[in-house]
Structure formats: structure tokens, C-alpha cells
Image 1 (spheres, helix red, strand yellow):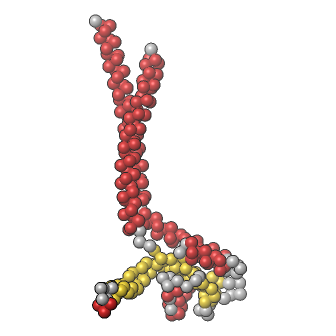
Image 2 (tube, rainbow, N blue to C red):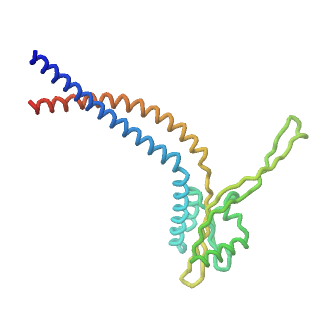
Image 3 (cartoon, rainbow, N blue to C red):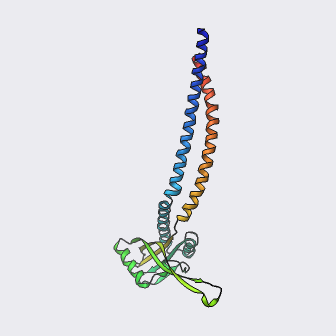
Length: 239
């Protein structure tokens, strides 16, 4: 009887060790999955707009530095067109006498192309006062007209709505070899990311559900397959 009780006790201990090890592996895999999903949600939803603004500011500053290095280059026009088409950065370059030297193609929605001569002169003075560089965020308000058609043309109405757009403004005054100043003026529109966040939320909900289901299945399979050889190794080592 003592021998039978001893064998039964060893078996029960073996089963307990196997179960505890399997639970530990299962819990670790589930915890890792949850941590990865939380990080994904934080970066893709909560930090999307701050990251977007940081990258927009970095792009406009980097563009200004590249343009400064190529002010006397024959490829300056192509460079400005590249930033306008691929980076949505509009550029205007002025001489010290406020005459425009070169600019990207005119864009009706561009903030720098809507500036008056007085505004450009004020930006130049502010940049000179702040060490030759001026970085600012400007809220531009415009009026959009919308035609509301009706069944009869006589009753069609036109409504106007005020639209506010946010623009990054960056100006740098560069002293040329001859001693004259050139001002590089750049602007880039800040696109609202609220609609993008809503789309990402729906996608992340689907991804989260699929990931949790797959991680549960994989955790069960892996915990069982890993725990068995480890328990056998421990038992053989004790013997």
C-alpha cells in the first residue's frame, strides 16, 4: 500500500508541475500579446496627431536647410517643385528688396501665396529679430461658397461657410556671399487626422479581436508542447 501511495503521490506531483508550468507559459504569452496591443493602440491612436505634427515640423525645417544649400544651384526650380508635389510644402524666395526671386507654382490653397507685401515685410523683420529664423503656426480663415440647387433654377440658393485651416509657417533669412539677404519662406498645411484616427480605431478593433483569438490558440498549443519535455527532463534529472 505504501508503494502504491508513493507512486500515486509522484504522479499527482508530476501532473501539478506540468499544469503549473503550462499555466505560466500560457499567462506569459497572453501578457505579451496584451502589452503589444496596448503599445499599438497608444502609438496608432493616442500619439498619432503629436507624431504627425512633429514630422511636419521636421519636414519643413529639413526642406529649408536643403533649399538654403541649393540657392545658387541650377536645380533649384526642380527642387522646389519636388517639395510642392511630394511634400505639400510651398516655397517663395525673396531678395532683400522684397522682390520675389523664385517660387513654387501658384496654389490657391497655399498660405505663402496669399500673403501680401506688407505681411511678407513683417515676417522678414520678425525673422531678423529672432536670429534669422521664424517658425510659427497660423490659422487661416477662408470663405467657401456652395450652390444649393433646387427643382427650379429660380429658387437655387448660395450659402457661404467659414473654413479654418492650420498652416505651418517657416522663414529663414540667409546672407548671400555679396552681403545681401535672401528670405526663404515656406508653408505647409496641417491636415486634420481625426478621420484617419476613426478609421484606425475600426481597423485596430478588428486586429485586436483576431490577435487575441490567435494568441489564445497559440498559447494553449505552445504551453502544452513546451511543458511536456521540460517536465520529463526534470523527472529524468531527479531520477
